[in-house]
Image (cartoon, rainbow, N blue to C red):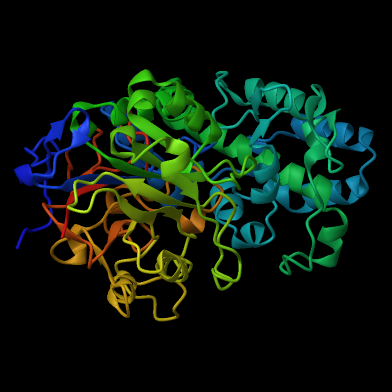
Length: 540
């Protein structure tokens, strides 16, 4: 039996010779096979420092280790908040909030003077679980971290934890930019009515409701607008101060190199990977978490546009901007695309209430020339991005099996399954998922071989440079911590009665057809936090 691919095994190279023979652009009947690949290309992450990545620059590892050590044991560097977010900064912020007509400014000043100003920046603020439970920093960050405007701009708050590209060499430089962002430059954004109108970023904040976050007191709920903005200012000031202390100048250079690779050039880097020779013989490509910008880039890339029909669901989500796609090789179509391909919509009843967001599921009926003895093969194709805990994966696969009604089924799926069983049942255990796929009528097989420890397709862990410190992992423990995401999440599923495996299942975390153990992804050359999974199937 073939073992899971590893760094040393040539089977993990996608350049291994194939049995596919093409004549006149169609698949020959000899060795009738189909090459599949599935890839969650990952939505753009607004925080380039949120997860550990792999950089050749040694300053990156030095910075990540130093931040973790400081957070763990700050010592005398655990200075009062007022030393990084100063009294003059507070006075200016207070005046600007009062000018907005917000209630509770005097009460917030009392909280500042009696509590927040004297707190140690690490032990008393960053590590304070109550601030997290009350969402006093994470909620305003959510609304103002990165703003997409109606006139086509992407505007970032001046902070460490997004793609803001202006240097912030000290606290004064940071605060001047931060204050101008919130109070001086209206942005053209949609109002709740749907109409576009200019609004200051400070006006985009919403009160925090105690009914949803019960850790919040009634008094804090009443002043939650000015209180959350003050807490966000303190949070941003602390991170800018820490990085300028630990890595003056260098941290901004590192941030910009990550932003260039994983944000500015993400779509092009994804296209570059898919156009590599290692993927030249892929017939069916299942993609998840595809942005609108990447869809446009796929259709504009001459080599890919010539090879593939790009299929997307009718319910594409333009707001969340994470959609599942299927790319079908044009040479396999049994007739014009409009006749050979048709979308299939699964209603809410068929999905049994599974948490499926708009755009997450893409399903098409296809008539393809796969080289079988009976001419064109009718089958159902599906690409799916599961919910965070993987609990929708089995219901969706079950609905697809029912929809197929005897037709062969091919599925590329980010099932979001986990290597260890959750005793509370809150996360989908990989063993249960594959067993459920294989049970009952019309069973589905998967392309992996060997034990699940060799199926892992994610390898990432949160750093300390993000608002949820309870989820952060030390740099040295990013592979072993229970908080790290090193799990077998991505699968190619196929109807066991119609297909059989014709080779090993390969993982790629380099973009060059190979898998390197211990690599935190994404990297500057591999733009996703999921491996590409590929295999060859043969018609029975």
